[in-house]
Length: 278
Length: 279
Image 1 (cartoon, chains in turn red, purple):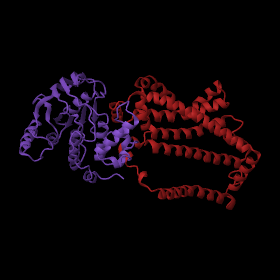
Image 2: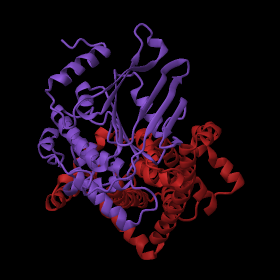
Image 3: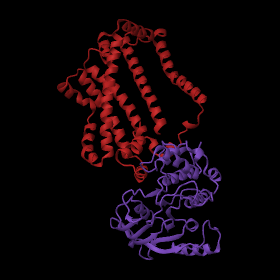
Image 4: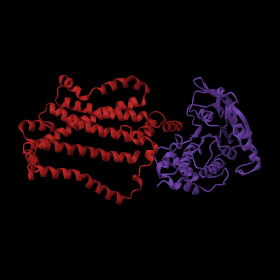
């Protein structure tokens, strides 16, 4: 995914077609989009069922049938454990994402708007970005421990960089002609920021936020694999140790659904924002 | 639905021949005076020794070849460029940074793409105007430039000519003492350009504001200006920078007959000054 999307190019913005579609047609199209999007997952589910229940190519330990994964889910849900795993994981992701995204927005804005701050801090931030984020794990273990704080910290590190990079580069690339026009009509400082610069970067900031959310889920699983007593990552390792492939697959499916769901929620907010600002 | 520029030109507003008592109230038009103005970028001299006084209410066209420093001169008068030598006086005091007594119509419309036409025009309103006053003024201006029924659209949904009209309305919203136009019609098709020139004459008749118009179009200058300043480098010395080559008054009151013989003669002399054979 490109961090500097085509919208920054006025010609590309101009050509966006979404404005002339009547409401009924767009509802119908949304319906068919959902149906089309479900086609491949349904086919995969069918294939999965075929190679397990019907053809019995794989043993249940290698690859349990869809029904058994579902049953495992029901079993865990009835004991209340599933809700606990999901709850704590979602909480960690949301906290880490919120902290990382907020820090990314703040630092990205500062460096994107102030030339001095950019020259002073960008090499340093760039160097930190060059460190693969998982390399911080041993240090976090030593300094913070991999309790709740350490996990949220690791997730926020993962969420920080996509937001920082997109905000920073988008603010650097706001059309200087628009900024000059704003100044010529008496806008400066915070009013110029609110009138011209921030609205101009809404679309790339959202693509950064969506990347950051995906990163947050990635780092959640990483942190829970490394050590946890609860959570979906813990469910993965525990199931692997107990040979419960059905639960293992259940955790993966739940991660897919949660990831997609949170991304879709962010997408709804994004569409609202784009309607206002783009 | 964006409409084609050619279509839009046909539905451009009918010329309003109302005199200064029209619906748009006038601000105080101001004189603008250049005193020995020069500009260099590094070691490259672009402008030198430019002196000119435009009286309040006058329309002066600054004519010159591409890249001769016309826009630089205009930007200096708007307070968008602080690097000039010499003095630029607006009214009785020197021009300030982003001077609120001036308003610029840029070569590109430079509308904020996420705001409606109406909200873009609103951007030009001066500070401290009440909400109702501001709304009334925006309504007047939208009416004046013929965009009242397109006011709710976004810039990408209107044609290039309409966007330029919105940009003009935005510049007029602060009732500038001096209106600075930087090739505002340069990117439009020929038919739309003629309509826009008529619109500018209407606007000038109604507001009486001083206009400094940068253009490379000889006919546009002849059609719109009281006086024409021909800017260019001295023959054989392009490195010395551009300065005033000719300053001539255009005879006849506006709107002028585009085909008059008198203008044809001036046209020939201006083309010669631009180094183009007028055939």
